[in-house]
Image (cartoon, rainbow, N blue to C red; front, side, top):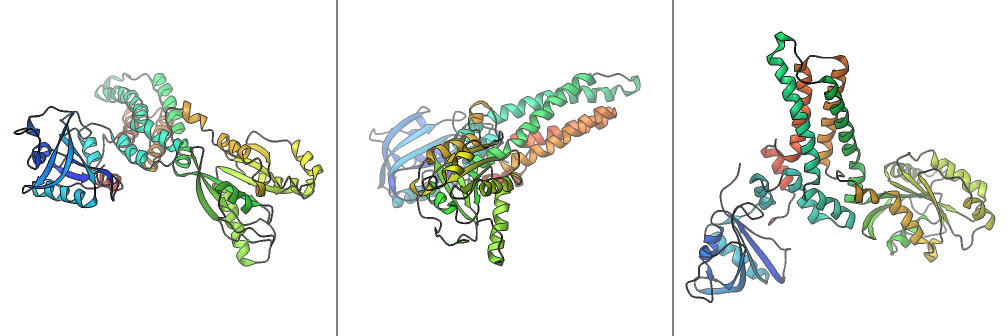
Amino acid sequence: MLDQSTICAISTSPGAGAIAVIRLSGERAVNITDQVFRSPKKGKKLTDQSATTLHFGQLVNNDTVIDEVVVAIFRSPHSYTGEDIVEISCHGSTFIQQKILEVMIENGARMALPGEFTQRAFLNGKMDLSQAEAVADVIASSNAAAHKLAINQMRGGFSKEIGALREQLLHFTAMVELELDFSEEDVEFADRTELRNLTERIEVLLRKLKDSFQLGNAIKNGIPVAIVGETNVGKSTLLNALLNEDKAIVSDIHGTTRDVIEDVVNIHGTAFRFFDTAGIRETSDHIESLGIERSYSKLEQATVVLLVVDTNNSFELVKSRIDKIRERVAHQQMLIIVANKIDSGLQETIQQLEVIDLTDNEKMVFIAAKEKRNLDELIDYMQHAINLDATEQQDVIVTNARHYEILKNAHEAILRVLNGLDQQIPGDLLSQDIRECLHYLSEITGEISNHEVLGHIFKNFCIGK
C-alpha cells in the first residue's frame, strides 16, 4: 500500500508570510534537495550530513538563486513519516514557495496528496490510525477543551485503552478455539466464570467509551445551548450579550424571532453553540408555529437548556412556564433557569424564585441581560453543566464519529458474547462473536483497514500534513 516515491508540499498556511516551510519525504528527499542546494562552504553536500541537523545556504535553479534558506534533515526511521525528511524554511513569498516546489518536482519529487505525510506515518508504523486521525483534530481544534482531547488521543490515550481490551479478548478467544481441537474429549481451557467477568468488564468499558461520544462531539463542535422561553422575555437580548454583538433582532413586539438563530462563541476556552429559538406561546400564525416547533426540536438536541423567564410576571405564571419546560428536559441535560430583568422585576417573584426547589440537573441564575449583569455567573453554570472537569480525570473521551460507530458495533458483539454465556452456547459460536468484537476494535487502530477507509480519512487533511 505504501508508495515509495518522494513527495513534497508546502506545510505552512497558504499565502504570503514571514516564513514558509516546504517539506519532502521519501528515499530521495535529501538527494533531490542536494541537487539544488548551495552551501557557503564549498563542496558541502547534504547527503553527507548527519540527521537532525540544520544547514544554511541557497536554493538555485540553473545557477539562478531562488532564495536563502535553512534546510533541516531528518533520517529514517527517526522522523515524522518514518522516511527521510527534508524541511526547507524559506521566505514566505508565494512566488518563492511555488518556485521551490517546481524545482523539487523537476528533480524527481511529486506533489503530496492531502494527508499523505500522516498517512505514510501510519503505514510506516509511526502511529496507529486513531492517532493519525487525532492529528487532523489537533489542527482543527478551535478551543482549549477540543485541543486537550485531540492531544490526548494523538499521544495514544485512546489506542492504549483499545489495545488493552484486545489483549484480554485475544487470550480468551485463543483458549476457546483451542477447545475446538479437543472437542471429542469435552474439555474447557477457557474458564467460563473468568470469561464472563472479563466480558462484563469489557462491556462496561465499551459502553462508557460509546456514551462519551455525546460529550466529546459537543466539545469538538461546540456545546449545544438552546435559549428557550416565551416571547419578549429577553432571549435575543441574552444571545446578543453572550455573543457581544447584535446578532438577533430585539423588539418589544411579540414573536419577532420566528426561526432558530445559531452562532458559536469561544468563552474561556470552551466553544458554545447557541440557538436562539422562537418564543414559545399559543399562536394562530402558521410561520410562527413552525418556528416554535423548531424551538422544541433544538431543546431536545441541546446539552444545556437556558430557560429565560421574565421576573416582571407573577410567580405563578413564571412557575407554570418552568414546569412546562421541565417536562421536556431529559435527565442528561442541564436546565439553567435564567430569571431575567431583575433590574425592573417584581421583588415578590424574585424572592419566591430564590427558594424554588431544584433538581440535580437544574440551576438558577438572576440576570439583567440588557445591562449584562451577572452573565459571569451564568457562564460558570454553563461550564459546570458540561462537566469539563471530567476531561481532566477521564483518560478517554471519544470525539470521532467513525470510532463511535465502530464502538457501537463492538458493544453489540460483546453483548452477544454475554448472551451466549448465559445460554451456554458452544465454543465455536462464542468464539465467532469474540472475534467479531476483536475485528471492530482493530478497525479503530488500523490493524484492519482498507484503501477505501484510509482514503476517506486522509482526504480531509490539508496538503502538507
